[in-house]
Length: 366
Image 1: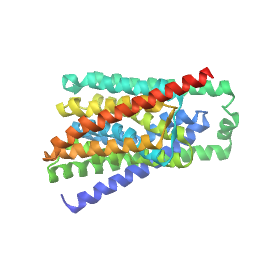
Image 2: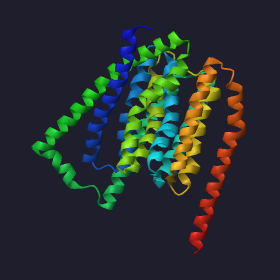
Image 3: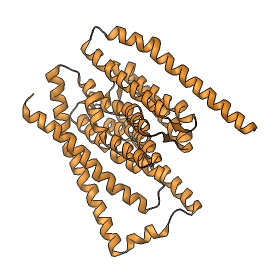
């Protein structure tokens, strides 16, 4: 691995982050102008924009025949979006969770995670499966936007002044500026993804680490940096619907759009190796399922729950490295997680859910 490769790898990260920022800035302002609610902006425009790095990286990897990078990047990013991003944001300030998310998007995220596992049981995601997922992305996006616009119109929140401003000369200038942001951001994402993939493959070969592990960790976290920045800033600014919607929406986008497009354009589809089917996808499903009781308890993510998410992400990352290097501590670490940490966490969540249910029942009775 030479110096030039290392420099390009770092520059790829920088281009991905800056490109995503420009893309989100332009797309968010366009979305507000057409009267979409903040939650739906987080679920669609912001989530899709911050997930653009995953799309760019996965598409480039699929086109180059690096299927392990593509699937590893998506699965790793989905795990990071919940455990790392929401955990970090909730550790800063408790996050309020919309009832709409708990009733619609969270169950959809769980169902799609299970669907990917079922589709991959034959050893790959083929062109047909990819096309179905991609169509699902379009249907979900249109449905979410139309639903939001109808609700805003019913509540009188769809201000005509926002639309009228686009008809003025200043408004048209601003509109052109936002399209410029989007175009420049997309260009930086494409170039950054090429450099990042080249560096990731070089690192994997140099250290003898599998490309799957690189995709699950370094590339996944690197391409999730826009989501981390967006959710943390939203948490600081008390825009917590945006923080949670960004993470959940990114997961939906990763499954539907990223995996769908990659499987559709890859020459032989996306291969689903046994490690992915036996460990990584089940972990992604478990993380999605873990959202339900935590999000349900008072419709908030408390600081201690955020810290618990961060602890699990650290444990997940540690397992990946121990397994990749076949370290002697792997057996003891796995036993500790399965015998103590996981049961203790499940017990804690059950107690919290029961306490919340009892408190709500008592409040209704009084």
